[in-house]
Image (cartoon, rainbow, N blue to C red; front, side, top):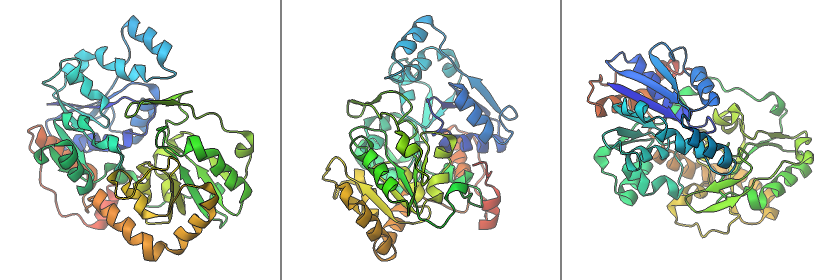
Length: 407
């Protein structure tokens, strides 16, 4: 049985969502051949870094590339706007995908192997990446997978009710990315002087993100209020290309550049897409989360803390499940209200917001003493028709020891 894990993206942010499952399958010692495929050097380096020595020793690594001249030419001419390489890589490597019995992916693009390239016998498992609320996470494409691994009952219920996924094709496995957190949190050395630390984490999508309308005004506020630290760590794709294009609602915009006054501000730490943006270092370090629709807010709520949300598009969000996380802190439409909203979120956190955060977190993440990657590995193996032992009783201390601490 040959099971492949594909990482096909410009950035590395999806690796931690499914690589731990590949490693758990390899450690299980079953009659499974585990293959990890990457499509650029950045992804390859991250897979090796997180692999804990198993990559090349229990887990095979394959680096896919564009093989046709026409594909390379098309990618070279359109990559600044569209993820051409990401789309073309499938057709150029069909022999590899045909060699697999099961393919495990964290994104939906791989469904074109079935819909466009005719590999209908290839079983594809979706691990998803994040536990957020955005509508695109629950579109019709979600029903195209042979099996889906979800973090909690919120995701399962929406897939069943909104996309028609058969509950038998869904396994609740927790959140493998959490397995990678070290037992002790690292503190950013520049942000340890007693001032509150705010994480501003705008999304990339032009029709939802606060960055395009209000982002620079947010940075201006912190330039003028140096009694706060700011970590500006947007979605890693916001500044990856000169232009940002979205497919769920056709929009094209550009993030622009970061002006010198922000780069030089001593209380502002700017990270436009380094590895630290993908390791939960910032969501675990910050005292307050400031954002819009990123699923990272749920990772932040692993330890409940104050949140504020920017409704830059004046969305009528109340009662809309796509904005369920906006119930966990004040929502503002005017940046003039930023200071008072942060003060309110702190003042009311324990009595108003914390109970809501805990309830939504528990709906989003079904966490047990058993590491999530082990639960997911069992689900993958059983889907593939392979025997996998039932979980043993694992205490909290033993579960902590299974974490790699690689982050």
